[in-house]
Length: 118
Image 1: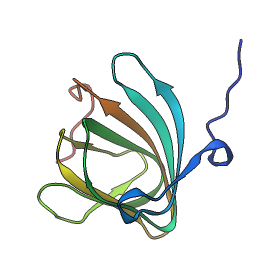
Image 2: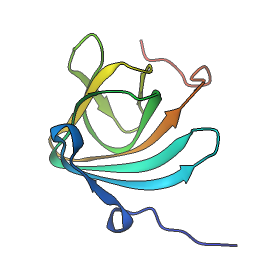
Image 3: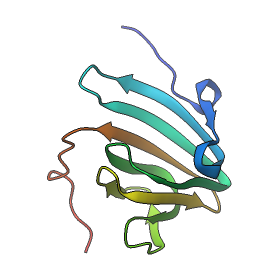
């Protein structure tokens, strides 16, 4: 067995797109162009408005915040919920109190197994 860490202390600060109070710890980078990471969004944190390079799935594991997509509607999101953005879709994520999320990016992400919110 090998043990690994993906906590905030081993992550890197993200400042691109005017992002604020964001740390990302990479978990997996595959040869098939998939990336998995753990994003720590601090109090009043902002992942700035930008285009998704590829398909992107944000799975909230703790805390709560807001997400926006191409419709530019501020939508609440909390632990146990996920947001999905298509390649090229403009999006933004914010949190007033803090939020931790697993981020999966890449080609051909199939979200059909996830229960869709009404």
